[in-house]
Image (cartoon, rainbow, N blue to C red; front, side, top):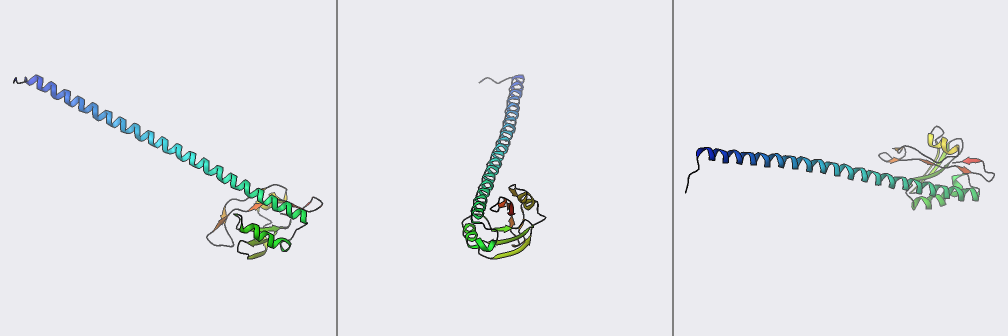
Length: 173
């Protein structure tokens, strides 16, 4: 077997080092590209999940408003403006809905509520609440998420829809 000359050995060594360096740089570039692609895919997935969650929440809110409008229409037709007149009906609706409380507030802001479990809360003042003021002005309204003042550790959103009396004027919300 013929021995390679010192120069040829050195050339082969440089070639091997060059090939190794190219492989190493190529591997690092491939790894960097895959990590960037993975991050991009993850961000896109997160954006899509957030969008779907937003759509679900919007649909839930719209469904909640539809429920409240149906209750308001029934109350208007029955000429109801006090909780005591529809307490049982509200409790039944409340038990089969996602609402924790349902109630009626006078235009002065005195709110009477019935809880899912049937507990009642009378004379709560909501006159300064923005959602209440919007409802009295004839608009559907929802509050920002807030701590439930009647149940420590729970969070709620407050909805308001106008309730008209038989002559068409706002009498409660």
